[in-house]
Length: 257
Ligand code: CO8
Image (cartoon, rainbow, N blue to C red; front, side):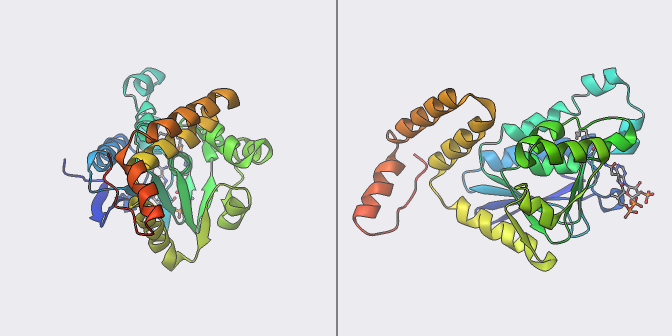
């Protein structure tokens, strides 16, 4: 697939996807969402890739869903176009995804960042859910992932009253992993992704899945899920290699088997 709204490149074992609609503040339209999911799925299926970074520009990560496109849509068109459902494609990606956020991450842009597994922010990052200003509410997880990340009080203020979080506040409230200067944020995200990308692939997959279960299952069910995943890894060659390498005081060589 040739992309028109994103850029996609490989950097060692990291797949870098850059949102690229500079004239529309990287607004997420249908075309961009289709390309984004395609690029993510391609990297997910590529054995040479171990982790993925989604970035925007220094000025804007993404200013939300494309309002010009959405303004003309009926409820039936929203439903049948699967516009919002496309977001669920991000949840299906097995490899770790890091969002590199600078500038505005608003509405669907904030929801996109929160759909990733970790967020590296620049000092200029701003997170917000301004949908209330448009007469709607977040529709791609903003009321749920935000509340789980920052707690009810702050989420309520953001969703009901368009409070925008600075990068510093986002770090304080647990929304992001790191805040670094603007000229370092992308490098920091790529470096983090690179370190993760060379880890045992099957363990990474089980680890991501297990942590995500903390949001979806009861504690008893989630502990059971974790235990089964842990036992499963003892069927893999990588578990034998990892533990043998430790005992032999050498680096492990992962096969993803
Ligand atoms: N959609 C479409 N176009 C946009 C968007 C957007 N979300 N944001 C900015 N643009 C366009 C502007 O219209 C403008 O275009 P033009 O030059 O042709 O007039 C261009 O980008 C530059 O924008 P501004 O001139 O406004 O730039 P400023 O620096 O003055 O302001 C802001 C930047 C603060 C980001 C401002 O553009 C803004 O407030 N944007 C809208 C933010 C917003 O309300 N986002 C929420 C959208 S609704 C949503 O995301 C619902 C999600 C539902 C599910 C998502 C599934 C994908």
